[in-house]
Length: 339
Ligand code: PEP
Ligand code: MN
Image 1 (cartoon, rainbow, N blue to C red):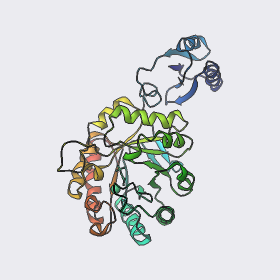
Image 2: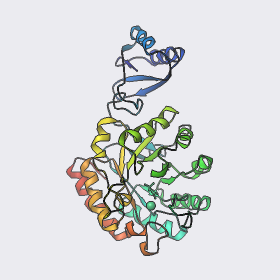
Image 3: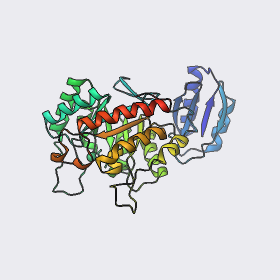
């Protein structure tokens, strides 16, 4: 249920509603919109009790939330959430499209720092790079782990770009929190509910990739786990789903962009690198993602893709990334956005 506050309701009135909601056995989640505040009440309490709150000071009404994901639903917040990265240095979900780029894996200082500088020069506003890598084969490169994280911190220091990196285990959260700005949850962990609950305990944004076989509804339920456990800063990322098609690594489901836009207030980023698996398809699908309304792009870039330790075939060389950025700016302008 959501308790909708009147426009201009006082802070005290909101706090009073939260107290009452708690007394009724629900967890209150205040959501501050640009126009009005709503207090979502989720949990095991009796729904009928909540209706009595309609008479409280500052309350406009009490309405049910029809979707199974409650806090992620657009029903509780009409406008798209703008997620602050590194205290607002970068904002995801606003008019400006945020491009995050970098290598699939952190492989060494020179590789990472040179890539960070190149993507920054081309207009990327965040650096990506995996320190822990979820590989299908246990014999493939597993990532530089803590050492990789330190290199990401160096690249961040040298370029000023906020860093996004993948967390695979809850026990690494504290360490990653020291060096990175956004926690990526990879496609393979989107339904690792233990990990999602732990990420609900932190404040930094969680970048939740869609699983290769999760429906949009299941994906949004995963986002709900993080929000319900206390962290409202969730960014969604469409990265392709598995279909019968084998010409591409995955099938980039751009339908997800308008669907997500309609169903949730969370911002959506598209990753055409994993979505296609081939560098030559990355730019066309990046442009299509912007046209479809994506709030950001995640692009794999490597100084020497032929020698990359992971995902070289889908990584762009610096020059190609620069070209992608120029075209992306033109498409963004055409749809009333900026890069
Ligand atoms: C990645 O971003 O390098 C990655 C492993 O992505 P995904 O989880 O989408 O496969
Ligand atoms: Mn990759």
